[in-house]
Length: 88
Image 1 (cartoon, rainbow, N blue to C red):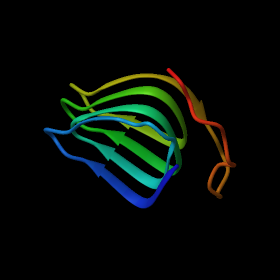
Image 2 (image 1 turned 90 degrees about the horizontal axis):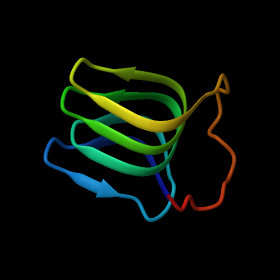
Image 3 (image 1 turned 135 degrees about the vertical axis):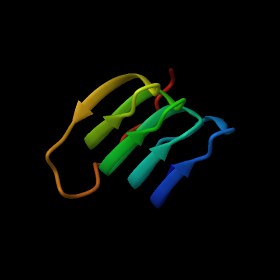
Image 4 (image 1 turned 120 degrees about the horizontal axis):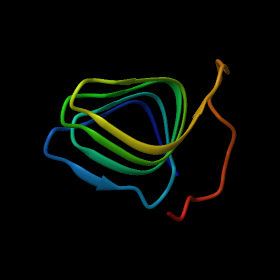
């Protein structure tokens, strides 16, 4: 698994995660595919694309951004519990 306090996916990035990503906050300008666990807010910016499985406290999608994910909004203040690798 990959763990980070804050994660930013740049505008020209096209990332496919092999392992789940755990982060406090996520900002997507480019393309991100995989299993994501965010204890804070996920923000998909204009031209950003998020695909896969997402568990987060909040989600914001700007006009022109896209989210194609199985979504679970949580009210937990702590990081999500451990999970197995998503094979999508």
